[in-house]
Amino acid sequence: MIMFLLTMVVWLVMFVRRMAYLGANNIDAEQLKAPGDVESLLPAPVQAPANNLRNLVELPVVFYALCLYLTVYTQVDSFYVTCAWVFVVFRCLHSLVHCSYNKVMHRFLVYLVASLALWVMVIRAALALFF
Image (cartoon, rainbow, N blue to C red; front, side):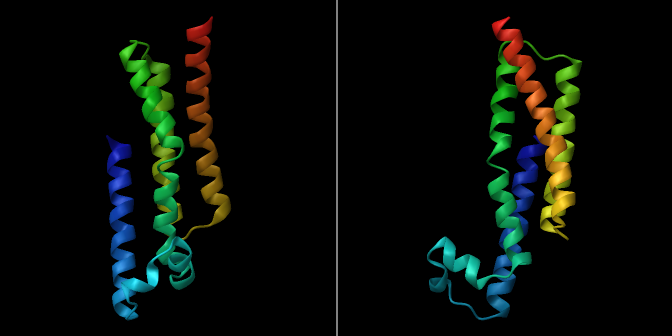
């Protein structure tokens, strides 16, 4: 549920920043027909939440599917729960960095920790399934 709420919050941040920028700069919505138009007209701080929103439909989709699999096949244990919380907390931190000061190495490090937690879960589930 936290990941769903995170996605909603990032979407809201994106919406508010875009609308505020478009209104303050009198940009006609017709100028934003293609993704390239949006990127060329909006500055990086306004674009950051949109970029983060795209990130939230990449690896988190694997996380959602894996959590569903683990639940359906009653594989959930404390190790998976711990890894899942590591993933969620570090994805939240990733979004916070991405949508605020956006320092690349900070963003990369929290992304890496979240990703490693997810891949540990995936590998463990695969090993349990096949061996």
